[in-house]
Length: 117
Length: 449
Image (cartoon, rainbow over all chains, first blue to last red; front, side, top):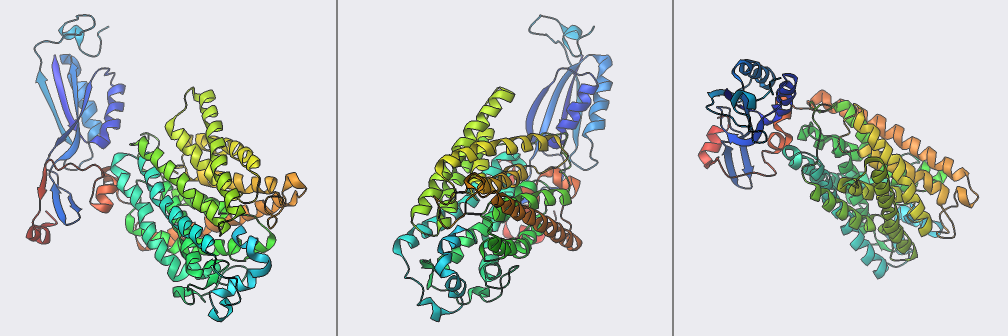
């Protein structure tokens, strides 16, 4: 099994979700995160104070998949999250030791999306 | 001229129109009334508060990354439209001029002093009317959210206040052709709401939809803001309609109570519609209903009985409710439904004024359809059509001309970042985490990073 962690632009989330649903991905976790990906920092001014916004809003997706499904998911995210500008994000693919589905007690490959059948 | 003038018109029209120009004539006008002046001072402040109220109403309805820009489009009108009004538009609207347009006699506030205009000081009349010019411009912004550069927007409302608002105000309230025809518009159903509504539609078409329109839903980021805004609008509207009597008198009482009752009826009917069709009564729906009811009673407030006001408010819920349902499924990105609320609500109210108007409640108004004068409905319809055409066409022309000088819209990339950062360099919900304080020399040297 693999855990895919994808960090993307918030404004691309809808496109990515659509691509994931089309790829038949049924389970994932979405978190609002802040990060810095080398993009230029906008300058904000509040009264006399000017600040450089070092951290930008990002969205992180965590998706557990079986090995053979990993490339499909990665391709879907690559395709849907890209704008071509600095700051589009990263995809990390990590090995996973165990997966348990809480409702049924299914383990490992049986427990990751999509439900094998 | 709205009733504010109709009421006074029998004896005072010549003096009214000249008072601002010839101080010598002012002595012949009746003395300034302390009570009337007090109420109009209050009303001016009430109507001014509607624009910040509108900013909250609109600001809550948009997503978080466009909140400040949306609110700023209302707030900047407090400055730009107010100055334009005092310097030029007031004279074009209320100067004697012709049936089509006022004149330059009171430009730069020349001759507008503390002498009487009716029973209140001339300056107060200018100020009170200015608050209407401000909110009318701000209303349009609900159709422009999330996709307009701020400079062109400011240019647009400045020019619009002179080219569109001032002439239409003159037609109806300044003694122009619609007034002479007998069109009834107590506090601005046509001048303010139909006018802003059609301008919003045209502006939304000229600008085009937001790039995410149609595949990403626009959900309100702060519904309590929307309710707060609706509440402030209702509160301010007592000055908008009640003040349009131009005095502390029976007519102001009628207009104020009607302004309480009509939106109440709209709210009830709207809630009923939602319960029947969607199974739930929503907070955004109730806030919208309040605004629709307020818009609809605006042209009628000083002409109809309180019972008619309840009927009018109840009826007005239907066209706006269904216009809103239709718009949401269309390609028209009038994002905050300015047309459904103000355009359709204003037209409904203006037409129903021609139905319910009753001289028993305002002897200087007119009777409507129900009181033996079916022709009034046609007069009202003509005033609506005239405003739709003039405002629609001129709004199109103004935006196209500004578009020749400066791009109206930002790039796709900028649009996705949001108008707050792009236009204002601020965020509505900024966090200090991860920000780097810039010192003066860094700002001067390092803006480009």
